[in-house]
Length: 212
Image 1 (cartoon, rainbow, N blue to C red):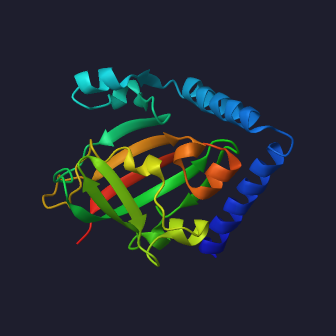
Image 2 (cartoon, helix red, strand yellow):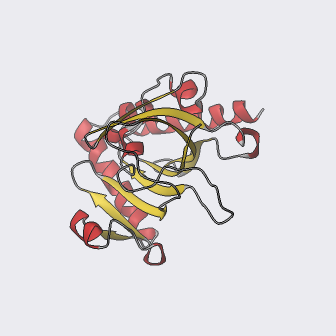
């Protein structure tokens, strides 16, 4: 029943988003998306920092100040909650990465999809990630991803890859080890297929863990 419920919530969100855009131009839709993102930033008292300030800060965001870094080239906002244990993906490395996430449709103000629930505790989304000279590409493993099942594509949203240069991808070994965790505001251009087609932004909370 929970699987059905998540799909129904997703479909309802898509219908509502589509209804809002029936008589809008693409430019109107993008303006509406930007307004939605800015309203969320203001309402949530988010402190936005530049990429330059982010680098000066050692590629960290201050959670106590609710800092997010804006990647100006893509429009993705990122907050690193935990840098994570282990190490960063090496140049030339191909690695399985396990993700638990909650996807929030910012346009409809609702949770749209999540595997971060008890039913899916042992079944995180699995993706294969390649780091080629600092350029990251990834695809969901067919049959092992709720994102792939629901959206009908193994393509990983570009927004999900934004944190990879800055977080460690490891597995807990010691009692105090924690896996990487981020929050992302992802505009439609960097999002999953339905967000791209519907021109709506999503807020994600995602953990990243090295697969076996």
